[in-house]
Length: 414
Image 1 (tube, rainbow, N blue to C red):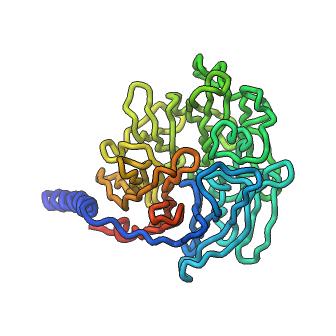
Image 2 (image 1 turned 180 degrees about the vertical axis):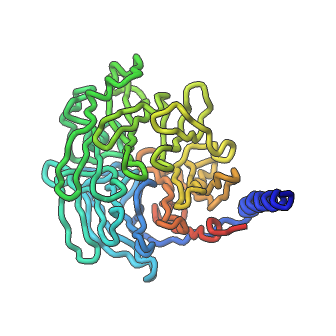
Image 3 (image 1 turned 90 degrees about the horizontal axis):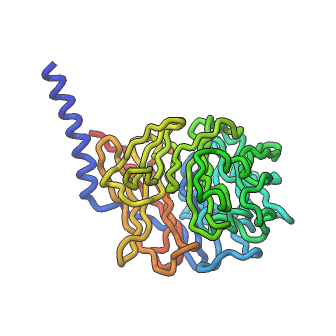
């Protein structure tokens, strides 16, 4: 028994030692995989950028920066072949995009060769679905926001309204037909069948404003939805219900809500008004940056449909960032906004069992990258959690994509 206790103690000590050693080591070198004169980026942190083999890396290409997209601005869609000299392969184009989330470009879960992205066609937004091998493309008559884990369905919101309420996240070109309504019954969250293109309104804005608790500032506010995401087994969805008081003139407030994929069983998981970036850890838990009532701001882990919350990464993750879990769920991948006079964005890993942080680098972001057209690093990992990709302008060529090999960090065992 005594020998067993000694072995366990030694193993725990070894686990604690490894992250400490990694913390002191130099960060792994970032490899730039796209170059100027044009600018390349992927956008948000919760989409599948790498194909299942980790050979191909999706991205978008544009020839300007520093201003809002106009209705006639078109970006190119492509992918980088990481095993062929980082060759850029053009795949299509989009006329429906924003600086923060692009055109929702991503691999379809479970597919080795199909990708999709949003576009504009006539007086509506659509979704293009492309087989990158055969180049066969089909179009469904609805944009998408996020995909179910089985790749068969999506949920989406109204990008016209988002563009009015939060520039940088919606699309230019089409006006919100309900702009004069605070909570229209014909706008909200839709579920989309990726095979047929059929869609169904599952959470109207007119209904979400009735879901308690209702604060006084919500009553004269203009409402919208943002940041939608399926959980890891597709059994629940989460989204941010946001509103701007004083008829849309005030600063936005937020609450995090979960539901079944058909819009039923709505539950206000974080009513604080402060929810920011989040990710599902598993089918029941969400890690989100927020400031719950009476508690400190930080990354809090919520258990769906309960009041159970727990602070994660106290002291190690004190700043808001774009957080995901790597494939084995022991590591959190995260970043920061530009910090200090040098405006450096840190990308890092946090090892949950040992409470240790491992820096993956600090990347300078010039002051011109601010506001709507800022370039957050938005770190994304490949399927097995050994490579990550970031967007960053630190090389002086404008926003470009860079990959970092983290295999030696995450695979090292005591």
